Length: 254
Image 1: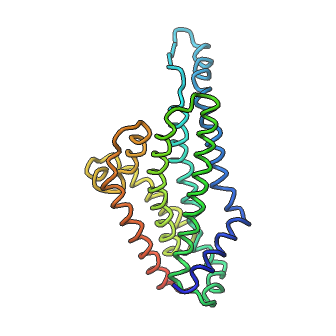
Image 2: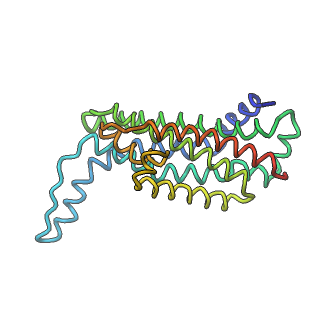
Image 3: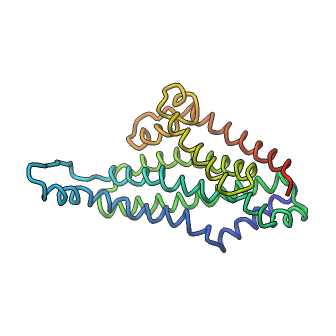
């Protein structure tokens, strides 16, 4: 892949110097900080609401570290994944529309290397940001609660990262296939909701990467996540999705 190293360095430098450094990492740090606080305050908030309603009493157990971790995972599954979709929608189509893709490809850079560098740079950003956000969540939880069960959070986040990696590759494919960011984002959101829906169907949850969704909560609770088929099919999806993105981009007119 001609020019992969140089173009990947350019992509990572661009991330450090633009808004991309702050969006997803900023979200992950924010959720890592606020999730334990929300978990700690939720019972008090519910009591304050029900206090004004005579005859209504809701008894909640004292919040624990697992509640903080569950809140963090919930934010990852919803807000952060949607942010991955939106950010990834323009990763290729944006460069095509502005003409920078043509400029880059006039250099000793193959289209294959262009796509692979896009995927790798996004994954590097996502992994580092997730590690930082998880560390902040663990530290904040240790201050507010006892911090027990941190290993389960790390395991759940690792499973989440596998699905997030699939989403990065899929968004690169959609961004290569569609000329507009809106169309790529719409297709990405459809993929997100379809896999979420499939995760409720037994065979799909057992034999495909849709099973990563329930495996996240199982890993967080310390149960056997049964990751054999989900991880194997996820790995295949990442490889096939990358090859498809390269193939689609090689056929596109710039």
